[in-house]
Image (cartoon, rainbow, N blue to C red; front, top):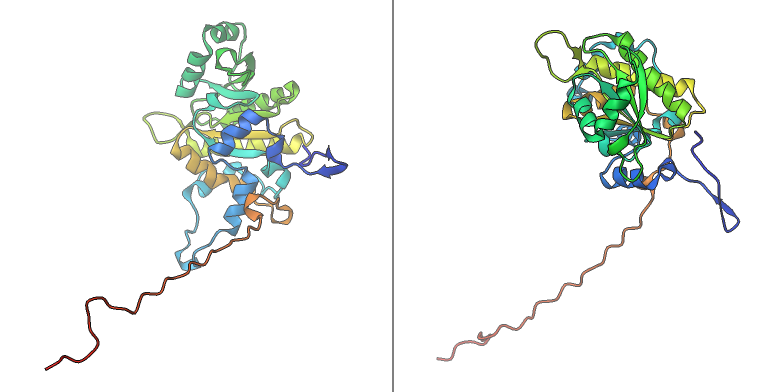
Length: 292
């Protein structure tokens, strides 16, 4: 997706940023809640103050755990970074075109079914979605003012199975591309934030798969309809891991930085306050000598 759209305005053309390509309801949700595009966040990280090497943390454990899924070091690409946004909260509340949701025993799956109503249950009974596959339905009662319109249901594994999880993500992205989806919200699927009894899918490994699939999708479909893909984190732990790992797959593109609101030079005017001089007169006191 090209970053700029040419618009006629009095015979002149104006460049529009990626934010201006987003529909107004989603723009309001993201902007007013303080969210930024990943290209903006990566730029801020790169320019932030770094502590002396002696006090600098070597690396976060998320960067070295399950790193085998990162087969090559991706190149920096501003076109990919500007189409990503990390969001916290309820995925069902976002005014995007489509949601990617899991078919499993998670709280997210239960919430989606509860909000969508009985119509979703009926629609899913007509489909057979095997492990690693995805199905498509309407959003039914989740939609507010027409958004979201579509739900991509992914049958994901409950244990460490990167192949099936990757296939589910890939299938959902492929179907979204066919449907012409421009904005989509994707949760962290399968990953369990903290160790539990029995077999489970570690969160760090699941995030590696998700970020790898997103990167691969952007590389495969350079002319994709996607304007914005929101990575939705439901817990603080998910947000921490996503923020720790995202630079491995979407590094900062210093050569093609996009100006943002923070780059605008603002003239600061300081008004000088005139200090009032204290009166030299002292009431009730005499400066002369005392009379004998």
